[in-house]
Length: 193
Length: 288
Ligand SMILES: [Cu+2]
Image (tube, helix red, strand yellow):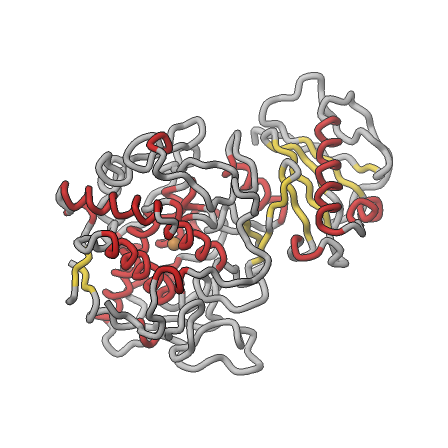
């Protein structure tokens, strides 16, 4: 593999969590894991969607800052399976936040909230337990992180999540787009000219 | 009057020009992006709650038949001579052949950002700005054959493997249905990676860029691809004369798919139409 994954256990109140040599090798993956307990303080946010976004952006920004921080070994126990996870993959900041209690609302799916460079990446489940995203929609992956990395692969070097018009693709109101009305008047017709 | 849908490679230069012009006019009118939004809205994987109609479900084929028909109607309102061409990817397999020519859809994207630079849909012409994307990218993206990790288009044999199945679809009526024509053509295979993408799904992957995203409709090749998938369904119907759309009846209340898929005589959202009503297209169009 051309990348390295560095996972260091850490407590959420300790700042630098990544081991970065002076020069970050291109395409390197750097990662950190918080324990679930440490994470929940990050995940719980009573200020709603806007506040949550703000919080996640802030979190990502601090991860970005850490990329230049000197190496510092954090103490603590290794993170359990459901832990906050942050990594820099191909220069993109991936943050995976568990959401067992559904605190993050509709935007989190299957108990996970994922962002890439601070922007929400909507995860969806297949019935076989695998995961897919809107960025890479004709394939699925074994874990939320694998789906997020695949999304980063598809984003390429410059694209950012979120349409130019500010939506993330899925509308949340469950409304039906009006293609039927706008494009064609006669609804009940099977195959007709 | 019944019109014909033809292989895109057989269109004359004038027909190509008119097809491209109609697409660009439908886009200019704002109608095209409605289709993009609708496809995004209806792509619900089978591990999520709620009814599925467009993908990972028996109605994958009638849903896209109607979707292509609606686009074809939009094109024909602009130019009545236009019909939806199909791209037979079992035959036209080169990234330089139809439909990737300068006078049709243009070619693959450039290496740095996958931006399509050739043909009528290149961003610099200002006529094909992506408005309904998953990302902030405003230009059309493609990566034909995915050079960074090459894959091949499905073959005639892959299509034949789907066509040979005499049953339309089987329980559990989702992306894990191992038997049945529908999923063999839709292409949710077992395993991981390249071996698991078959037929329809594999073509999305081969084109790359927008075509692998939920906003795949942004690439006009979406329609040519789905017209061919529709043609393959037609072929299957001719080969298995007595086979019908399944399930004939909705799954019962104890079935995990209860209320989540569309049976033969049930309404298929967002239209007020049933799969039964979409099975026979011979009064509207035929394939040559
Ligand atoms: Cu498709």
